[in-house]
Length: 499
Image (cartoon, rainbow, N blue to C red; front, top):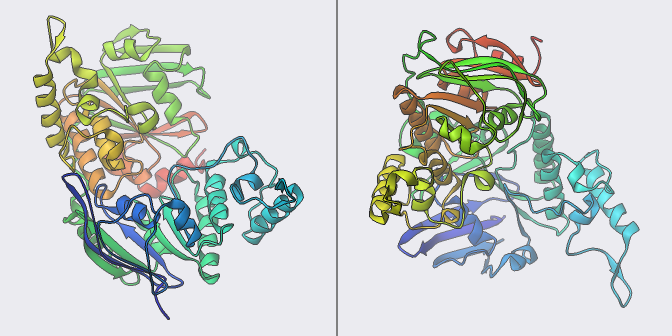
């Protein structure tokens, strides 16, 4: 039996950047094959070549042992290759059935009128086949993110896709939705659908995948069977260092340090309940909870993006009032939003502009911006962040997700706020980028910055933070000492077990 897909010596260059160098990859029939690597390792480029978004410079592609060239995304779909990307491509105003068959609706007659009843019947058959309890007439805007991801898969199956590319499919999903997705993947394997699985959550790879191929710096770093594979071996192949080196050592932050921020029964218009807590100089305070617990709403309120409706805020023991992010920034508060593309970056502008945007006043003299100083500052920060490629003139949208996130963080590098609020700072980045981000956060804390880390990754807050507060349905539960608890206990509190 021939492999479903074989790639031989695939190479691709973008200007002066060699994105892929002689990459080999084989997807066996009936296999879920993980494709891993740090941000910037070449995963996205390889997937875009498979789907016809980019054309390879060199190499060969075999589909079920036949040489093929994929000219564009439509050609990829025609050849049975479909991708489910992290950013969804559904039309929110259409219903579930219309989205599943978008572009190839069942029609009849000279005027190609859509057969609405046939459309609904076929959509219902797909949903029932995978035991998805959604009415096909439901507008997409009325369903959750996890269900939208599953609708994307139904959409791919409706064009009879035989090779399915899943790019970070579980992002934003609850555990129950992830288990449903994994059951669908197991069913698809039995129905002769072959899958490439990309994820930064390595535990998912061990749970659902058969083999793993790792890319590093655009080259093959190894292919391994999942059975018997050790996590440390996998991480080392991805980043060149062992798992034990992933997290930085904690600092000596103490609750005896000066209180920089104090909240007293504070609540914004979008928060479910008022909260009270304090944040000390030089500490990393973690606020964690499941998706929907109110973390992001708390962060936006503290940065002045959501109006306060009750309570008090004290900065350095002085009560303050601010009604906008600009006023919050003047008081020494910095903010890294959860949505880096929508709220944290100017995607069409260059790296150097994005990195220096909050520190432009430091680059001015008599009201005139020094482009030389701007370039020098941007290059210095980019080197500290270990951006790859190290080219500050590139537009930010051309960089990988991990490098984009580093830029969102790095723009506060020279500004060095008194208080820094980080909302999901490592979401969607690989283990190597996480390690660099953790080191940067710890460096800020060691320099006296008070860090408020809002994260739904329980392992992250347990291992990175000096203190932890758990949010449950908008309520801040009791404070936790990470040295006296486990990740599992933090998770159980976030799920309401101790409420």
